[in-house]
Image (cartoon, rainbow, N blue to C red; front, side, top):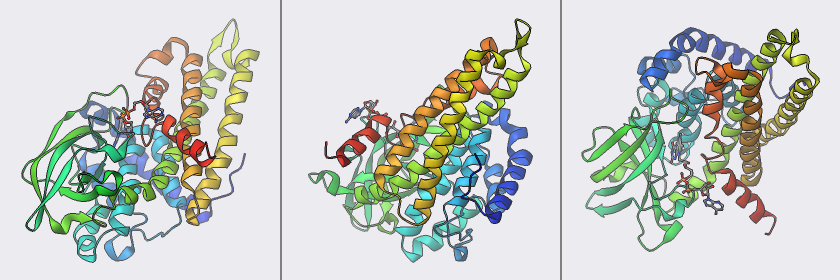
Length: 382
Ligand SMILES: Cc1cc2nc3c(=O)[nH]c(=O)nc-3n(C[C@H](O)[C@H](O)[C@H](O)COP(=O)(O)OP(=O)(O)OC[C@H]3O[C@@H](n4cnc5c(N)ncnc54)[C@H](O)[C@@H]3O)c2cc1C
């Protein structure tokens, strides 16, 4: 079905994103999988081409696209069509962290961080999840205690995307010991701060190209100037920005599944069994027809969400619906794609096998699918 949400300028942007990925990323994909990281020169090249700070105002070196979320959508779709890990790493930086640094910062902080953010000299991460739990964000245990003109951070975070390579990490910490969700604040923790260390790159089931790490804070003195947003309002700041993270996740989930399904359809036209193309067996033909329909119907909902978000009207509940549903569709589609590849579908050298492993995390992260359904249920008064 023809999508109608993009204008000529978005399509031109898509062409340049594809060209960048074909030139800089695809040829080095295996190297990134082996290193379990995106090399800095790729970040810098992405910065040079203007992909890192799409929504950052131009005065700080960004793309200045404002609320038009279609540009971020195009970039995310093209990244995830190559690899779910790329859309995760670049998405955390340009889509998830960016609003914290533009909307909650002081002018001094924007001058300090945003130009490097846009060039790729400052890669970013966001650290909410802790070893003791991620779903119950209000129960986080990392503490920040005021000491003169600084905050002293103690605790640890885990599963942090870009955790090893990030130069600046937005860290959620407890500033009000007995205040629950009302006692959390956000801090910019930078490489080189004494007591800030990183654990090993975590060994994941999929998404090998992304660096995912544990972070440790041992009496880290974070200057007062690195408080992001209002003291004790960190939980609200995070809740307000989660819809963007979730619609971003939905865009990636769907684009990733659609790209692999397209390749699988081609495979089923070429691969023969019992003298005929495997896609022409009625069972497979009907299965593929169902999946294509599921993708396109889902795309219509996600596109509506993208337009609503561009008009600043996407509700947290609709973002939750888009996030859990696309994660489910993606995993359903990829499971069938593996099956249609037969034994080759289980071989790592086949993109479909990696994609299947890469997708398993999407119902878990960015708020698990169970938490999404909890939000939807609560909105129904249940
Ligand atoms: C590869 C990867 C990258 C990640 N990147 C980041 C990152 O950059 N920054 C960051 O902060 N975090 C990141 N995360 C963490 C991710 O957001 C958490 O894993 C997720 O929020 C779930 O938290 P948890 O793992 O502690 O599971 P838990 O909270 O322990 O939940 C375990 C299970 O219980 C279920 N559950 C919990 N509460 C309920 C409930 N009320 N009702 C029903 N079921 C419930 C969950 O859905 C889940 O199935 C990443 C995780 C992974 C795997």
